[in-house]
Length: 445
Image (cartoon, rainbow, N blue to C red; front, side, top):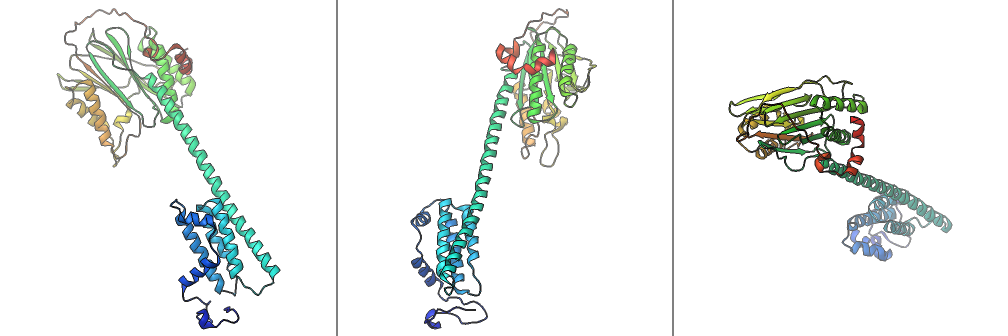
């Protein structure tokens, strides 16, 4: 059915009189100008449209959609199209401010009242307008309520994420306190080490523990797993290792006590691979205990041979008791020792290929004449370039020890003077050690 107001001819109204479909006005711009005159925008909406803020484009689109609904509602009289105002109002509730959305409801009510069928009773028209306003307001309220809850949830998640990042950063700072500062002053040895965490906090640990002026212990450990759980166990292991360093115990005794403590707190679910290498520059001797860790490399430059310091016992923490053995080797001038964690050799490129020990061995052979610092940097940069497209998927730890015994006398006696090492190499005060190493006390006592 086509509605033509009484007293107006079709030519004056400019209608297409096809009775099959609703009539459509020939001049759309003229009709839009008529709408703007009849229903002017409120000052708030005019200000919003004129602004250069991020909501002007959605507002213009919503107003255009409202005008299109009003235009269609004016000519289709067989049914009411007032319900179509829900669509632009719903979009406006998502992208526009609250006051803008409720102002648009008033605009839609005015358009609905002006362009709806005029033959109905005034009381019924008032009822239609009120019901439409309630319906529009309810829909806009529900949508905006959902948007507000969603934004509140996003803010909560972001705050929790920021708090977690702060906690992780604090944990990383505490972890760095356990790492060595500077290089140990041991005549005849050149030592360099570094660690690159994969997730802010690391499950790897390394340290240099001087025993006396001629003897030093190189420690490298890797906790199974990644992230915060591995970092917590690593911190406990590092603190326990520092406490054990103050005692006159052999490496086997240290490993046994560490194994007992870690197994008691982890119940065998988590374990730690550990390698302790003791170097005596007077005797040119190397003694080590490898508890399931990656075999360290010993490259002899004079003979161009490379040997591996393989495991001498399982990782600590798996079994209640650790039956461990020691390995040993003689050292000569020019020897290079390379300790590493599996994050280096298991670094993968975009094809899924691992960096591997073969590439590592080739770099050690090629760079044996370099300084310890330069060789360590060469190894890390080579591994980083290899997995540059993917990045390290595990903590990367590298230690390089280069032997330079020229000018040192060789002693064959077995006398050794042990000195007490300050806790954490004087990096922590007594109060800090008590607070940070509380979990480690259980491991060693």
